[in-house]
Length: 329
Image (tube, rainbow, N blue to C red; front, side, top):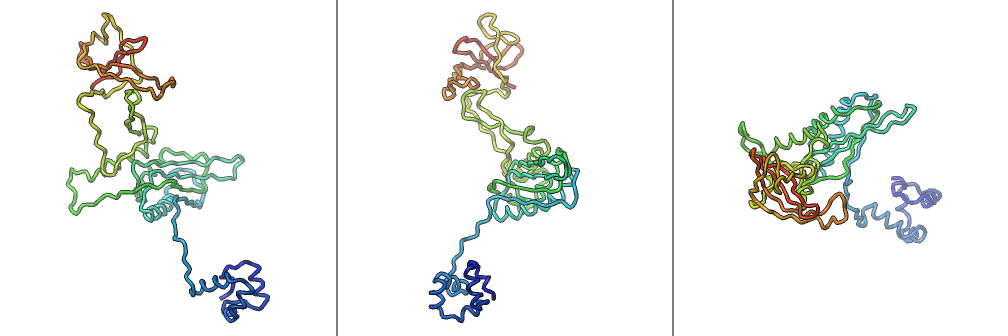
């Protein structure tokens, strides 16, 4: 076996070749003490580890924390639907990677790289696929990508397709049943999950989203819009408010001032106060922010002569007054 397999430095290898030593077998015929004095004891230890005469512990293999792969296209691709064939190969590689990590992916980034032969360089086309829940099945991901590609147009022919997954997410597999499902049953929320992911891929995050509760007593800041996310066990059960708190389903974008013809609030007729007041004084942590002012209000549930149930409040700070903030359905 040649000496080059030992991967010693070039100077040591040249010196050994100059002495007529070209194989490990010839090296083993030399006196060990003389070899250690001439080339160092570390070279002798390296040789013993290579031969298995000394333990040679190696660091454990750590798989990469992110996935990145690319594939050159055999011909210029002008239609986004034609990217599905190379995408299948990338998704199969991704599935093996995720199964090795026992993880799933919540967001995939495909990038179509365009031909550099034009006069001006064209920015690569980024195709994001955000999932409602972590997934790793290549077949399922391919169906979602096909939905996503219907909304993608390539500005120039693509010559390469790449796929990256920056962050891995814990994956919870669905438990199968020994018995066949009934005709009207929903299997562990699977139908809900697939519908959520299909809508997400077809319409995009800007059109499919959900509301998330925020720990803020101010009604206009108590909810925020976040990307759609579903639990693999089915849609979460909404949290029930205490029976003493009544909140309308419809909150106005901005409170609407109410007229007070007889010092009482009016909306399409005089309002009758049913319950209240519920005092809300909050927002001191945003003091000084003109876009998130503090509030000092007394809220009431009221009803007008038409039978409409409204959520109104009386402003406690100047210039005071009554305001409509929501409707009960």
